[in-house]
Image 1 (cartoon, one colour):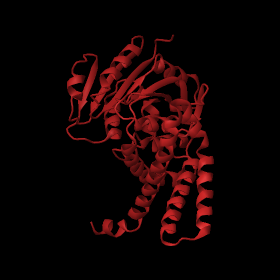
Image 2: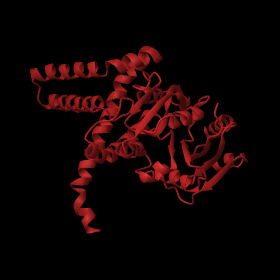
Image 3: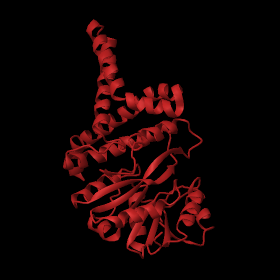
Image 4: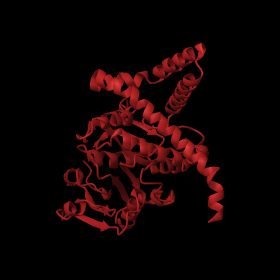
Length: 338
């Protein structure tokens, strides 16, 4: 094992009291043979996050006076970093054995790599919300088939490695919102440099996934911020993100299904039921592989819930798109008056 690597590990933290102690203990354990520093940026947490951080003498803590968002927090950590390799790890994940070393080893193996990211596992750290298991499944679906690695469209912001040179060349993290989604912008800019975003199977991590209602709110915000990026690159993202062509088509079908149901309330026409059934069957075909994936992990209970969860996610994407259009049209006059 090459122990000549030098690394700055940057962890943004906001109200992370549930997982951050385990997160840090694992990182410290995994960097025993790596010259490294651990920088935690406390993004004005209101819980016991800072109290927990003060237990660790091995880390450097930067405390922000105002909650600025995860992108800003990551950038502040990078500014303070003393080494040329930057590893960003979110405070609500726990990395697996040798994950950090494997990221480093893969980055240095070839010159066409812009970033190397970890791969999420099906181990959900959130034991308080059963619906978070659906969110975990939806987030992991598509990455479960990775054998060793894949050239991904985005960077995995939760757990990724990048050189300081490339980090500044792409313009650092863009703080898009509290809901996140900055990985799409960052990954796109790396691709524009003709570099690869590698997603590595041997750098696994477990995440604390939010419940479906919080995920729905996040997706509405993320979709609104994602559309301008999509319009620039004119292609959807890799399977394993929420921004795939299949996901958009499924969302469109959900919109049609609900539109027909509302239409049928006021106009009882025989052919609407046939059209409705056709769209439902078509959506089941599109989502079929995911439903099988959900069944393998949580059996029929998750399949039944997924039929509802899929509609919630799809409607969130639609509302995010509607919000984008609203701000670009109706919102324009109000912007000009300010």
